[in-house]
Length: 483
Image 1 (cartoon, rainbow, N blue to C red):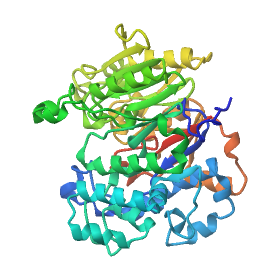
Image 2 (cartoon, rainbow, N blue to C red; image 1 turned 90 degrees about the vertical axis):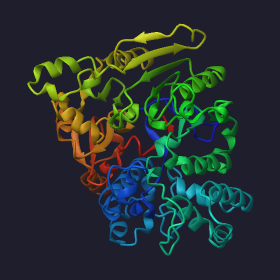
Image 3 (tube, rainbow, N blue to C red; image 1 turned 60 degrees about the vertical axis):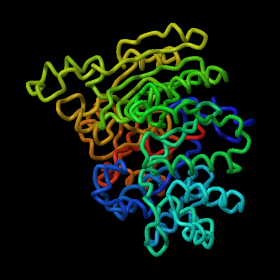
Image 4 (tube, rainbow, N blue to C red; image 1 turned 120 degrees about the vertical axis):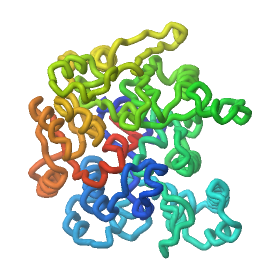
């Protein structure tokens, strides 16, 4: 059954696996090529990346796949010409040959469009120059650029002549973190790290000023800051109780009335409480499950630990599942594993009207099984696929390179990285067809396969450079409409 979108301009997400119809992305921009080793970790990267390889050999396949599934008229029959164009104009918002889809939408395109409005342009330029501590001369100089180039400057931090004005936004390729659609509402997130402050301002302006979101402006939710936060000592501002940070990788819309929120190194308990209060007050959902995970760099968000593959199937890290301890006992190398991997792992479920009586759920598998059976009405057995096929040490190795971070384009059809061999082996054992993005695109173009007929398919993306950025296909997408 398709979602009724008549009252909200095609903005509605109430599932992780319904057929994807519209999403926001951001292709790697010139700012990613400006990340230097001394600042990589401050900018949330583990390493510097080779921009041209990330674009041409990896991310461009992601865009082409999305277009074949969501907006084939923009790409079908044009593949040879697109691949032959060394300028890559097809992928660059504002260029003559840009694919310009209203279903696969680069946020840079939306930013360029709102900057055509003089009032918005003045306000946003002042906001960016203020937080970046630009000189008055720089502020004035920015008025000379057209809207598309100004959008590129605000994102990349650099001018067309390659001079840098301020830090780049290399994490903007992970669109999931700036916002999340919850039914017909949009939750604007509050990034935890200073490196992403400019992203949140750009997102705020896009969502409140672009015509695409005009009909649901009253449904845009901003998380209130602690009203006395400016009075708190710095050490208290950093505490989980007082700080207000939330990122989209910690939010999953698993069923029409059920939302998951992770409390991680990036999302605070305080922010989760505020979101729960707002959503219950507005009657957007009935159930919110809070999943507290260890504050570890490799566990970053809950979508680095599990994602949904189909209604009755999930991929997850075995070390945080019910079978984790048994798996380690079978392995003679278990002494390399953490002594107490679940010590900071806790699941509490809150029901609207009974918030004062949360239900504690013992483990992740029980929660996910309950979602599949009771929220999604699955009659088939609920199945779990484990990172690294639950073999030590491949579970943790491949989770680090986003084996659990998959984007479902439709029920049972997912996109993930090609490098996670043991996880792919586990999918193959469950009857999944494993096919590379390049081969699938070729077969779509030649009508050997159709997106509408695919079932139980894992599409592999090249990932040597993308995986260095510490995010997978789930992170790189912000769905705004699903069936």
